[in-house]
Length: 312
Image (cartoon, rainbow, N blue to C red):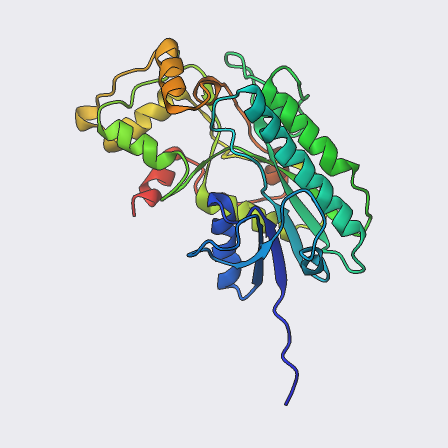
């Protein structure tokens, strides 16, 4: 009897969340052995093979990296919370420590994965003021706020890792529109209740991405061996908040009506919900020159087409 050939393996650290499960489904469909590094291996209904890790120290999980095809790190405490001192420290530590221990683990591998995709954020470009041009990968970065500081430190930790056999890509992820998770289902519900007006001034920019393009771009970056460094994961058509919400109202609002939420109302609502108001009021206008130059073909480049698909 011939020995069974092992399935090609992909490691997703923090892969039990919304974005990780989208990738896991795609890779499982293609016959990969998908390993999810997770603190909680007793959870059920998760796509992929759960392997225990704590996100900061070495363990048996390192063996899974050996001869794997790729490592994708999505680990990080959610920023959708009150940014109290303790929460801020957790947000920072969860990103820095997980990235650091993965780099150390890769350096102990005889045959490490050839590519490492590490989550990042578009926050490091800072706020987009008025109608200034969209930020791309060549735009200067800033440390002018908490989320900006966290993202800069996160990427610094990634690029400290130096192994010529492992290609590193920082995924500067925008607002992901998903069918069953993320912020889109909530926005849809609020809009259907007549609460789909602009937030704050409505002039702040929103960079977004359909969940299918999240998967498509991630897979594209695994395949394109000459892409390294930071890449913006965002639709080529960012919108101002007032325009974004108008599109939602056209789809979901009764009679197209939607009450606006002034800035003070957003701040009060976020306080009551235990969230951070800057997540709704920040202005991020981001596109990707790298994806354009490398001819990535977006499945959903307009918000209208994205929403139509999410409703199917």
